[in-house]
Image (tube, rainbow, N blue to C red; front, side):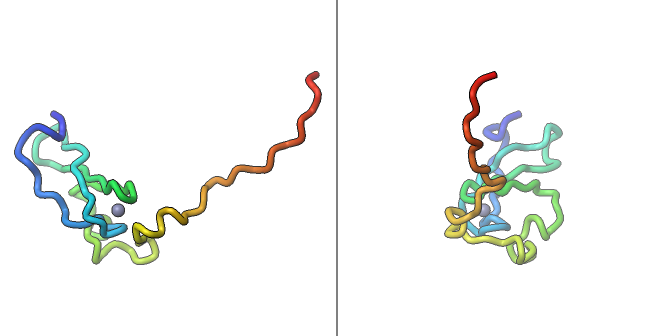
Length: 91
Ligand SMILES: [Zn+2]
């Protein structure tokens, strides 16, 4: 079964992490009506409908891990790219 099959699901109103309304259904459980997987297309956070409230509810999501869509373009690149080594003659 793909996400396009079956009855349309009620999408969460906001992403738990960034609170953007850009939530889409990503997948459904192979056994019908067990869980639905959602994806925030703004911050790429994904969660299953059966996860605890601190993973699915924007008001219960842990504050240290919350972010705004504006922060996304300022995130550090990890891991950082080390300086290139000086070239050496082929051996
Ligand atoms: Zn998000």
